[in-house]
Image (cartoon, rainbow, N blue to C red; front, top):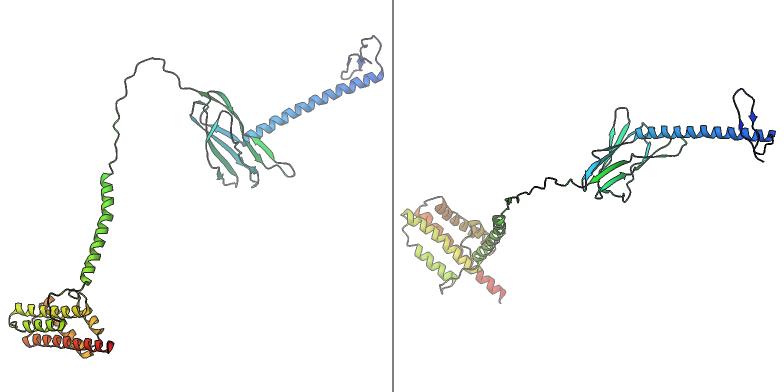
Length: 355
């Protein structure tokens, strides 16, 4: 069945033209034509509302996300800073997913991705922004795509995903030189070269000097501890007695000879004890000698007498003390008795170990 063209006017009766075959339209044909017209009318209204709603949503979302670029016309390899800003409402969970950068963007390279920076305001609201540095090595006019940001929906509604604004970037070569002028060769630029020669010399000398110093201390200490080799063929006891007999001839009324007397007296005892113990005791102090003599188990009185004689020699040597002649002779006698006791003590030890 073919329906003719029908028209419906407000406050008027409906009418219908005859169909193409020239026969009048029936009531069913009129009702069907009316329903079809009403359906088209409401479809037009719904389409318009949908377009308006989408436009409003887009406007709202565009107000939420701001895309700021420092430039849009660059030379090949030049960098662009893209800043994405988004104010966040009072809801703490309004932002569910921040920018998601793809692995690659056609015609663009991501040089650096800054960290998201959050700013807090007095009304407990927040704003978040992030700066991305991009560049391009393809000449032409390219579109940098929008990046997704996901916000939480209202109560009972799903999350909404918002795209940042896309923008065009013009990438071109540097303009050619149209002057065609010949330019002079640039002069040689003087470059300062740091000379580290003396630093290397000083750095190598310090450990070398330290090694030399340690070796010197080692061999000096070893030389001091080495036993003194006596050229005398006499025993340590006989040599000490002979030397004590020689200094007993000194004039103890002369200040110079008194000093030589006491210095020589201490050297004789040190030399004797060093030969007995196979040590070099010439550089030892009075305290060191007393410790060595105590190891020989001498009587306490003999050790006390030796200490008195050695301290007297120290006073003459270092404090310019001038003892009387009888005091000097007493020091010689005490050292002589100590040497004799040491000799007898050493002999008894040998007899005990070798029966």
